[in-house]
Image (cartoon, rainbow, N blue to C red):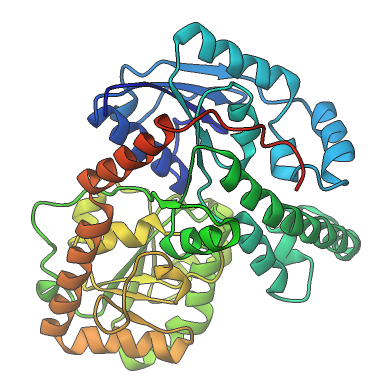
Length: 429
């Protein structure tokens, strides 16, 4: 297809500390630029961090403040409570954000707009340009899953539960659960409507893309993040047999939850079977989190914090552990480990969306005993560890290499630019 001008409307600052969604956006920008397209970014953020991936070098990035609290509250009261818009949409969709996007598209001759999650779709469709709705995850399913987990409101409140006085947590949790339940139901309708009302739509995970395609009755593309593919795979057979790696900032609740569960429930079983077993945790670790996890007082748990060379760290262990307990979509950390040739021992949620098969590309277990069985298997059989790591690497190359994602983005943009302008996605179903 001919080169086009693309505007990415981002519901976040694309710079600063790397996160899963930011990696997806960086992949989109890298793919489109590789294809010869001119990319612009309109970011709805309070401020911009100048520390950005190299792919953003030379990309015009304009910041616009997100709506204020009063505007969000008004939008939620008039649209969310009536089911006309999800709460996620109410956070960003406002007259001034729509005007900013329309003005930018007209001023710069934008050919197609990429909307960052459901939060910015209505803003994008208001420009009149063809829209690619890059929805990331099925938020309706994620929220429904969160509601199913546990009986208390703390699961819904997450970190906020700890900041509330004890007596306020149960009523606050109950309110949060009611709001989240309504949001899940509204989003289920909105996601299908968005998919039918834009020129092209995508999700990160293939299973979720297939599910939204079933609900909406339109094609849904799978556009995950790309990951760097090391030139040479890790020599896992040569690494300490009882050494495993986890990567992720522990100020992010699903990562903390995964490591805390592993430390409490899995580590004692692992140390009983493999006395020298150690889980090395790489990623930002606040002091209070380190203290809560036990830090140096818990044998077998090594909190490494930030490291300069993640690739070198990946090459220093026999296995990668992903004891993920919550969340949906593809986990970047897992795909990166697979690309490096590390055999992955994971819960089923940890490999969600990767296409990995238990026993072929990874070893799965949702109980402490099953996870430890996988770790013991890799520790006792170096050749098996190398075989699974090699299969995982091949899978990652086939599905997540930069050239693969560029080709997928080319097809998605071709569909968008050959279609007509999309109708307004703010109308209720």
